[in-house]
Length: 454
Image (tube, rainbow, N blue to C red; front, side, top):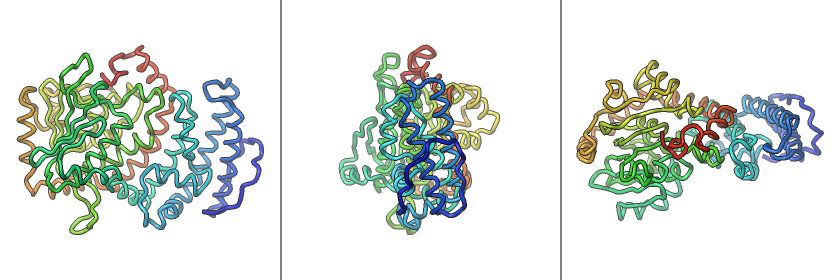
């Protein structure tokens, strides 16, 4: 969108921006308002060096700009999305979309340069520009038309997966940074290998996981996917398999966990693909290719690890394993768990796990609401093999697709994702979360959890 220069911004007045409902006029008003805030912030020291009055002024300006962005998008989100995607002809992924919005509608969202500068600070030293990205995605996903198109676009294979596909099909083996991928008969095994951090999730793991899921789904030789943790190098669990320790709290404290590339991409990217599949080049007889998935849990599935279990078709847990979602402990929203665990296990158990931090051991009766079978830890390989053979039945794919449609209609997922997009962004910068991740990372609360362990 081309617009004339906004002119020199007046000193910060604190006045609310008034929108008329006309896109061009409102976009110019927002651009002028956002430029005022940028000018004010440029005249202040970094957040960690601001005095009380400077902090208060910056907070007021940032809040007023967020109100303006929210108000603009309430009126124009769908029209903005259509312009960014060429009338829904182009399929942009999350970062491409939000930065395209920043370029086409100056002031609507933070620019690449602003986000890169903010990335240099620890979480406590940031101005929370990711909240502004959350405002944008909340509005886009909240629109049925734009939201459905974005979710569908996120099912496309990644560029990285497409570049690796031929070699993967030829060799049936790949090492992708934090994980290993291997084809064994009709099954493809994704083995998390971030052993130093107990398979805790970070930006790199999310990218590796989506690449691996794409490769599994695009390989005609594979009928079933398997998710499993590899053997650990962590001293306490040396040589043992661990499924996943959830989010890496040290990275979160240091500002290295991305809202877009981790927290949103995780839910709308590879986990969504576990359920819906990956978009096919040929829309006949259906637009996506999906396959059944098995998860094998050894030692524990914490946080994001437990969340993964709600998206697969068969969960095998070692008899000495446990599950937990320490959402109250960490302070952030545990992805789609509030929706999916409630669907699987009911509201009461969900509250106990999410709000009260209840840990569930594989041997408890309630664990059968989370896992399908409990196996002797020494017999996990055999249990995984048997499960993959059962799920390789051709009728499984059609029936899992219908179950997923009934259990989680796309529009239900979209509406939840819209609210999650904003709530999670706000939680990332809440004072209690900043304090908790600082205590975790410095070892004053739970030294093990700071390294990705409960």
